[in-house]
Image (cartoon, rainbow, N blue to C red; front, top):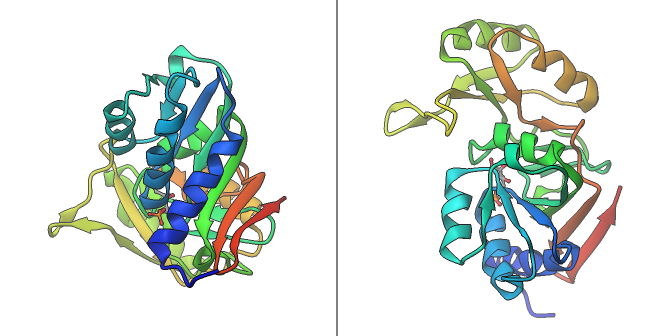
Length: 226
Ligand code: 5RP
């Protein structure tokens, strides 16, 4: 196979994810550049899916632009499958997510879905989570207290900025990016950080880990099942 760049690998796994979309049912749609490729591919199934539940305003706009009906999570029950990218994925399907600041809605839609299919290029595969700074959505008034709590765990947390100001999420909150952590116990880590006052969502997806990962590699799409 010809050498492919990252963009082409993303398109390859975006296309491959179509086989997991269930006809006549709902598809949960994540956020990011890999998911954008999936949304591009989903045009081919227009009219054959009931619709989508989206994890961000950005994905909602893209879905609507191609004519896929977008439902509010409150108006539907179980979603057949959730398709989303990741910033890192470990050998058990645990992930770091939130590079695109959509982690809270991503976790909500993932929790409402029967299974999580992760689409990623092979650069996202790691033996242990933590090389990518862990995004954490927080209530702004608690940010500095949470920065100190991460420092006690050996992490360095920084408020994510956009145009010199704290980035404001779709939920009106802020993001901390935490570097210097090695997350060998993702379930425990996620449970602990989740209960710190002011934390809305930690970008470790262990309780909502992937069931399948479609990994874009130089040799084509590799399917990992966890
Ligand atoms: C957004 C996410 C994305 O899935 C993650 O950042 C990967 O994005 P990309 O596909 O652009 O590499 O968690 O909040």
